[in-house]
Image (tube, rainbow, N blue to C red; front, side, top):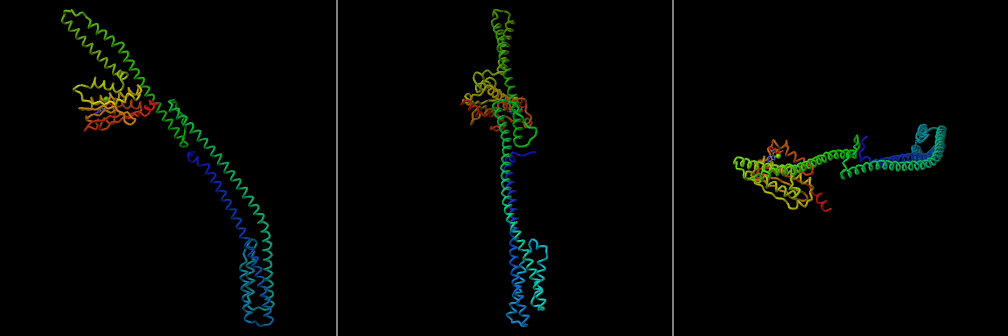
Length: 464
Ligand SMILES: Nc1ncnc2c1ncn2[C@@H]1O[C@H](COP(=O)(O)OP(=O)(O)O)[C@@H](O)[C@H]1O
Ligand SMILES: [Mg+2]
């Protein structure tokens, strides 16, 4: 199951909150139970009083009616009193509430019928009146008894209930609170340890990679959360880094090989050719044969050209000026020796004097040198320019190499598919973590090639 880190962090407080809401629900239910019992007790009290009042009114009404029936006459105020008493009796009966055993029993409806039968307006005979009153009051007394018994029962059970309720509420609250705290603690300990362990492992792996120990860190088989995504990303980043470092090592190895070949050529072939040249130059000059003299001079010239070509090849294989004079001077020497002629475009060179103080290592210097030479060669070969500028300058913690011409610009069809030279430039700059781009030149036409190398780390190591 996929649980995000956010969910893992929120799980413990959410569990505690859920249990507390359950506890609140339980307390609400308890309160509701208690209040419904209170309502019932109130209904019993009202009924009890209503029955007593109805009985009292019935008794007075009966006495008054009997007196009136014996005398056979009734004063108007007595009539009014009879009507009032009957009215009070009816309202008292109406206040009798149906509760507990009374709800289904039919006592209340029977009482109402009996009360209606006692209406003095019907003026019944003396015997019938007495009988009806007796029946009515018996029913009232039955109701009173039931109410009394039920009230006692309820009071006892209510006391018991309240005790139980308090006890139950306290136990349940205690249990839920302890459960919430324990569960919250366990969940948060479990998930925080899990997250912490994995974060520690990721940071440990990242530190190892930053320290240059390029072992592939483990990657999870399937993604469960953001930390797994991060672990997979670190794994992929390391893979790419291993490839880049591999390329860098390969380039370094290739440069080392070129340097060795240049040294071999110098120590072996160049010195052999030089000694042959010296031998030729030391041939006796008194050879009369004109033809032989001509041939010897021709051989000497060929040999000098071969030696000069060999020096070019050696310099191309490994520019010695770079080791001796540094990057700026090596580029300058190359331009002076190979690009300074009338049939080639005119150039302008600016090298920031601070470049030599940057502390660039040999591999970076070599890469920058070769990139500059390739960019210059491209101007000469492809741009059809009349002039170009080569700049190597430091701009806000970056080293910027630019070669800008006023030629025809890179043809649209060549922009996507790079040739070998442009590919080499990209690969070499990637190996030294520099960025390159080609954009329109600031001249009216042409191309501006630019390489930007962040030298913040270089200056740091220098000052460290
Ligand atoms: N400064 C430039 N001006 C015009 N076109 C250029 C320039 N630099 C490169 N190009 C174009 O890019 C193509 C690829 O260059 P590159 O990879 O160096 O190949 P090449 O080995 O032929 O020099 C060239 O054929 C050329 O058309
Ligand atoms: Mg090229």
